[in-house]
Length: 232
Image (tube, rainbow, N blue to C red):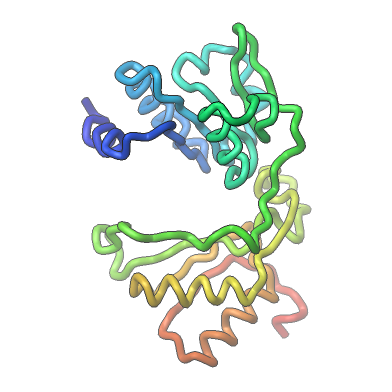
C-alpha cells in the first residue's frame, strides 16, 4: 500500500473530515488516488478537495457526478472561512445550501453553492504555522518558509494567468507581514523567506525591507515583482 504510512498518520488525528488541497494541476491525480484509497477503507469520513486547480477547472471537472464516488465535497476559491462553514455543516450545525464555495452531489446531480463567494480578510487570517515542519529534511542548505502577503494581482492584466491568481486583489497590512516574518524566524530559526504572491506589492516589500534594517533581523527574502515607480 503506497499510502499506508500517510493514511495511518491521518487516522492518528481521528479526523472529522479529510481535506486535500490541490494548488497545482499535477497534484490532482495523486490527491484523488489517496482519496480513493482512503474512501475504500473509511467510507464514513468525509473527504473535501480544494485549491486553485479545483477553482480553475471547476467548469470541466464536475461535468460527471462520478468524481463524487471518491470524494464528498469540493470547494472552489479561497477556503479559510468557507471550510469552517463546511465543518459546521458536517457537524449538523449549518444547512449545506448555506456553505460558501461548495460543490457537492445530491440525488445523483452536481450542485453548486448559490452563496456569495468567500474572500477572507487577510488582516484577520493568522500567519502560517510551521510547527512540526522538518526543515532539515529538505535538499537545500537551509530551511525556507513561504507565505502569501496578498491574494490576486494588483496588475491583473496577463491573460495567460489563471483567474484564481489574478482576480479579487487584496493585501495584508505591510506591518502585519513584517511581524509574520519576524515571528516565524524567532519561533523556527528560519532565515529565508519566499513570498508566494502573484505579484508582490511594492508597499509591502518596502515595509519588510525597512523592518529588517531597523531590527537588524538576519533574514533574506525573495519575491516576484514588477518594476514600479516606488522602487526608483
